Length: 226
Image (cartoon, rainbow, N blue to C red; front, side, top):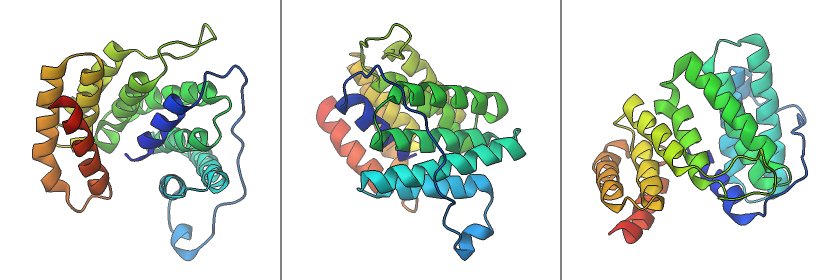
């Protein structure tokens, strides 16, 4: 799930902000022929991927807003579908990577959506909701100005990421993020084992759209762990 790369940018590169911004729906999504035959959540997913692939902050925010709007339509029409909440969380993460003011509002919204996904289908996207929660709690700032802000919690992050591995032990990203969190918690031996697990799995996913990202992630973690 590449969107989590954007969350890292938000949490590590901006100061803790006290003001709050509201995510609003953007203009209607592009109505090209391929999109017309897709469900709301599929179009929301595709917009999130398009948004994270652009380097233009305004375009990134615009596409993510459209993705959020589609996901909300999905929630209204199909509240039983885990995908609706999952891709709303994904687009929210991308939106706040481009529009950082009020990011705590976005984080709390993502956490709520992830918990809803877990309640509906915890295995969705290879345990994606657990993976997203784990990554969030791993990368949050350790301190903040507001008492009720979400903060870093490496123990909780580890619990969520181990659940993601349990949901799909064959998915490399679950192991990569667990390795990074264990390393941050000072558990280098456990991090080494998780990284080794990920490395073993990656070659089996050569056709996956995140393959090159995982290769870079592996290289970066290897330098820190070994």
